[in-house]
Image 1 (cartoon, rainbow, N blue to C red):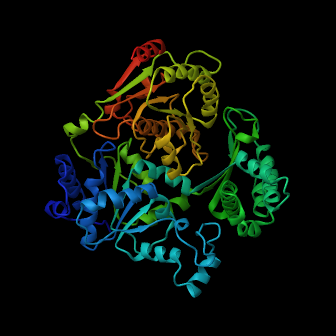
Image 2 (cartoon, rainbow, N blue to C red):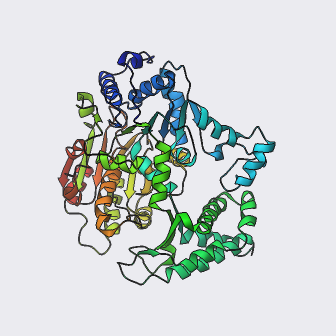
Image 3 (cartoon, rainbow, N blue to C red):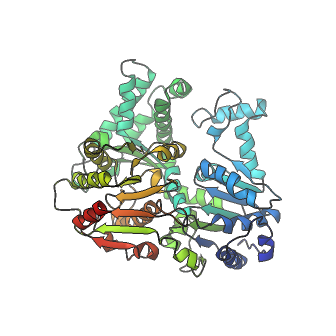
Length: 558
């Protein structure tokens, strides 16, 4: 049965303690009209223009009416912003219940922080019978029973609920697609396990033995893939998966996690989870993946455990149930494709309305302080494009001042450019690692001068970098297509994901109405893709095509 949510505009507006902007009121009215028709809705406004002030009064009104409401945000940091910055501006009869991941609560048995490695089904049974004060059980119960929930993507996808929700709001829903990939796919990089083994090799301990055994099977899996560019990814052999599942010491290593250093503990958690997937082959498909540029280097290879398509569909459809969904984002791309990936629902063409229907002047002028330069003659015909680009960027960093963000499509390109820049630039460079937690990244970028990050890092999405003035994108942020995707669909999928990621990267510069910034895209392929429906006209209008020499001359003069 389709959920229909019918509220009056006056009822929603009465929740405000502040005065909303006219276009926010218009957006609320349009959204209410669509929800009354039983439709899911897409709220499309640039970051900083106040999407939260459009969906919050609707969420509050729905909760006040007794509907079950869930607001999803990307990180715990955004949850805190919601509590401290946004919710105080509204009259709230039913206060949202904040539910975070179990690692944010104390374990009643260990008296330490709970985690997914040690919070086992056996421990939960003990807590149910002996520890009524277990925080993990408490928040899971609240998630099931409370009427108004505020939580993050991962917790939403990890927690079972039988009641379901009447309304689910996905804030920054472009990031929810990535969260789904992370939730249903576990990836173990060779270099991570090799590093863990080498750090414990001299101690000859259980960690070294377990990691060493895993590497033996990893090597066997890599050797099953024939050389050649068409053989980067293949199904992992069954005997390799069976061997990983039977590695001795699983329970003992899990029990010793808390004794390890933070880096080793993080790697071991991922390792144990991957082994657990190998023990449950009925819901996982396993792949071994070589690197496109260095196929013979095992350090660049990865093993992947992926839940089946049918498993994913069943889980996601059950989580969303019959709820109405509000998607909120600055960069949807094709909304029907995006909504399908998020909810696994089948949408007929043009059935998800975009709100606001007409962009207000303030939104049209939001990017007036943004300049985007695309180099028409770069990359040049050189053996190492990244090194050439880094030499050019070194000059730019010497001539300019102000916080600068450098974005790369891969970890390898980031490393190559880093070597060049550290030798020729005196400014302090902060290197953001893909494994860094969002809170750590946020703290780093606030203090940084020059920041370097890859296409897979959290910096492309959701991170505010105060006083950012210059952004240089070394190449379009194409990422490897998922291992399960048919090659015929690979480019279409990747182009859409690349353009959304590119816009998110550019969007780091303009977070407030009067922000000013310059973005340089050192990849002339942008001219080929910028007319796509997945690329915003607001960014397209800001692009100026220049030669590398014209760009350098202009920056040097200014």
